[in-house]
Length: 415
Length: 170
Image 1: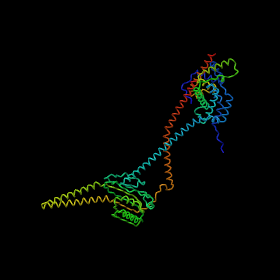
Image 2: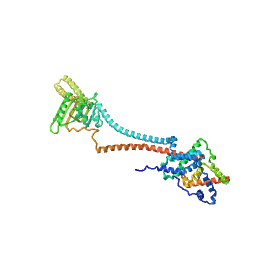
Image 3: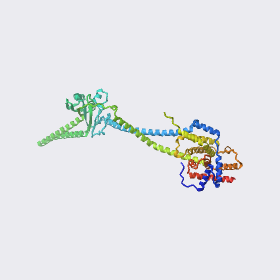
Image 4: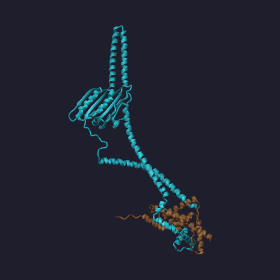
């Protein structure tokens, strides 16, 4: 594009140029421009003529549309265009790859978060203080405190029927959750659990019998039970006492009954080491006091002293009995875990199939939205990656073009 | 049934070639002062123009100026290549024109040729574009990438140099 004329041309220059143009057009010019006109005519008549052989050759090339020429000198041209095409393709490929990696990392990060939650739950479960079906895919509650002296509780709800359901249990192919074992090394820990089961109304009785069987098998105690059957609903509840050593096994068995599904399960633990120690020390003190009083009684000389010491000994023995009872109760709590089982009549829902469900317009629209979102994300990331590359390429191209133009002009000046 | 699409870009190129072949060669030959190189550069320029014929944008100028821009770049590339290889070798014998001019005209023609040969390449290029390629001042400006008044001024100065050189010879 020619530059805009900023300055008006000099009149003498304009007149000379007009004279040249007039001369070349075969028009007469003023005598003042005779010299310029003559030179112009001589220059025009001295125009180099195209050699006929070259003209013929070039005509043929043009007629063939430079087909032969293209095959004769493909290397440099193809190198140039091929290089830029390859560079562009490479840049685009790298950008897309980067986008895919970013997107994949995002997804991986999301799945890692899920995995972390799962692994956290698994780790928690392996620590033995509590467990949740989260390890089987259900959401995990915040981490439970399993440190000595602290209460620990972890609940789960809406456990997938396929995990604990009757169908899966009857097939016998689904792994049961591992039993919970809080860290009890050297500690006195009271454990407990609550299990809510769903069963069909007609199976309440059978499920109750299964509970009895499990408790008998594990040497537990049914402290209380209530079974209601008939009508549209049904209900059963059990208050069980199970040896703590077999609590995990018991809960595993109760969670995999043939005709029941786990609706929720709560495991709890409480460290009472301090209480047991306190009760033990109180008992020892009471016994020491009684021993001391007995010695004083043996040395007593007056009736009043004897009566007073006997009264103190009775108090000490009462204290011993009380402390002993407390200690026995605490030890019983440690040795036997309380398990509460409730069975509700419930319509068994159809197992939710992850991949099934059939085709619906809503699902298709949702899937399409997800696909478009991912595609848009990939495109956006690719654009973000390509933009600086394009800027660099444009800068390199501009610098290269400027240098090339300058070198060409320098070549013209150097001749 | 529709007729096959006509390659209008080819037709335009062919028309441009027919109308500009001699002018392009003359311009390149004057600039390079080497007939053999002028043939190569002319052929290369038309080949490049053919390859790029679809990229021509009429809003950026006329096809003729576009073609001479391509030829100019090819010629300057040739000059650069020669500068790297060896000094420019002129071949005035090949460029000599055999005609039947009378003695006075022959003398004047020789004087103009000598003066032209002594011009720098940049000014020789202006002469070639104006008198051998037959360009208007506006087209000349487009090819050189300068304003039209600037191109006119350059042409005027070049003509003044030639005139003074010819008068000095006489």
